[in-house]
Length: 221
Image 1 (cartoon, rainbow, N blue to C red):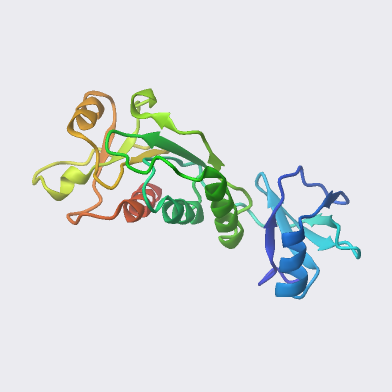
Image 2 (cartoon, rainbow, N blue to C red; image 1 turned 30 degrees about the vertical axis):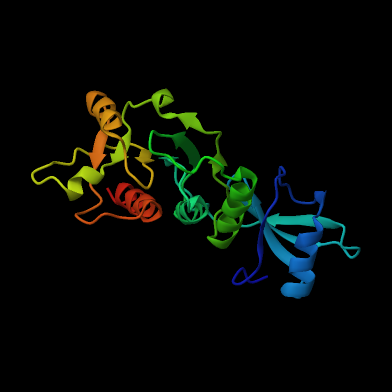
């Protein structure tokens, strides 16, 4: 079948040709009622297979493995939860990050995130963005529990200070702060560790935009 415009569905299973798995009613509704078809692509753990719904609409039958290469990368994205965490995770998932690590900073104000909903959002973003994998969403940690070694920090001080220099190294670990930015004592701790400062330009970006710009800059280095 042509792979263009074929619905893509994440299956939390070990995919193998010929295997059959139970299918959720919402997937059946999406395929039968919305897309009006019974064929689809399923993916997990970096691989993609063709698949088809069973005639009784209770199972999905795994077909041949496709030759689609997973476009995901190995970036570990540390972030302070924000009011628009859903938008942030949607966008960085589309950009291919592999791990999402929430960090509670001093100025973090979004403490009541519905992480189950966030998981659904990153699955949908993975399906839409042609990934063969879904980022791992980790449990929140405290700022002081971060390993600061070779951590690239999105540093908003570049928007205020002239003459400040970037010192980006080759690393797959990026940290973006909350709406109010990092607190002075947090910058002091990071400056004293082996972190690397990343400039996001001379304007002050919204936290969700800062995440996208930071990932893009690191990917292009």
